[in-house]
Length: 89
Image 1 (cartoon, helix red, strand yellow):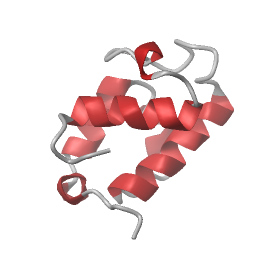
Image 2: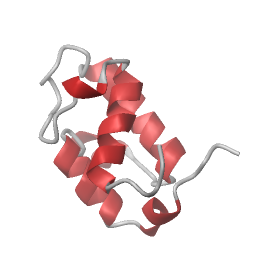
Image 3: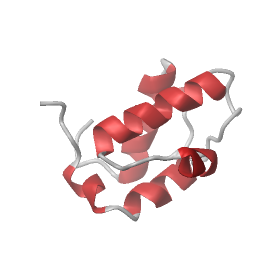
Image 4: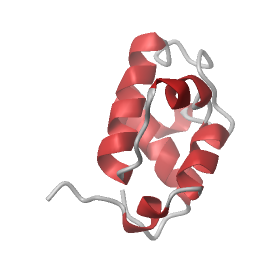
């Protein structure tokens, strides 16, 4: 993922990676349960990858709120680390 892309597109790419599905399956309005891979286990994978890539702390209360692409984008936009996305180095 590159920082030059819009946040929503980066979130969609992250979700596609976490759920191991083609990007085309991750619509801008996709929500939990919208595809079979976004089940409870898939959701945890998304949350872990969000923490790792964006450096945003995600606790149990937040996990329950981040159930769609738009909700995730709103949460990330509220935190400064999104603008300096981690690269894994």
